Image (cartoon, rainbow, N blue to C red; front, side, top):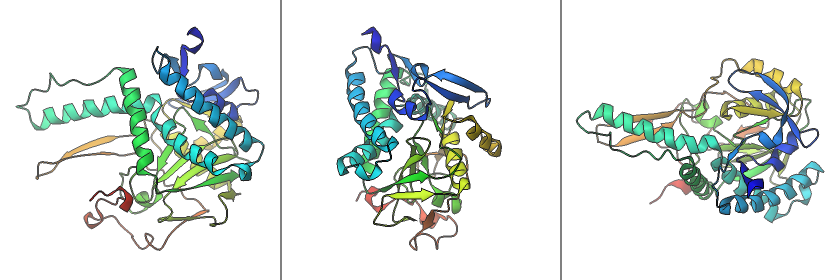
Length: 332
């Protein structure tokens, strides 16, 4: 059991894609931008018994990571066309598992519960919330967060995907939260909040310094052609913008292969270096609570992404557009 005490929420087989020797990785502390070279991969994005001591879930994740490793090896050899439909389906599903299994995702559940209690106490001062139980046990919240990731997979089953091939001198970076939720459409029309079920959803998952997996709303965006699931990108600004999104969504640490890549973060000084999700609570006259996440604005633009006719005519967000959910996410 002792050899599985240190359990990773970002798998080593994934981090090795950003390593020159398979053992160490370049690390940047998000809060201070301090560079820590040659950090041991074994010690990154992990915690003792993060998934519990019974090892049941840890063993399940090991089997998932084995499949992930097989796909990553194919990609590292340039065999994207050799990926089967099962490979692509697995990668699509694993993206949501990875999103839900991180420390930051689990702690967001705790912070959200605390915000709700504080909000209720402030609005309804006559109500005693001191007895309200907030589940702060890490293991329980990890399990809840992973379960939420599974729900998000169902929510996003209508989305399409593409592989972004980086043909620029600037590498993709990754982080301790490697899967990033973004929404260019919502930012463009001035709506700060969005979720996995929103129109215009984009989910970025860098798989190596040269390949990024992008899941997106194909009713909102045009990317590449229907005949190919690969899009080659030669504009360095595109890579910088995608790295900025990774930076914003990171919790504590950023990982990269080449140190010169980190210089582009000098352009991110206007973006808040705080946890990516801000939970906002409001109380409507109807007596309904509203909660939403408010990420920092990235204003990312990509030369290879265009909006479709279905959304590009929308210039500004108004209440008439509420709630801007995809049809597949609206229950009758």
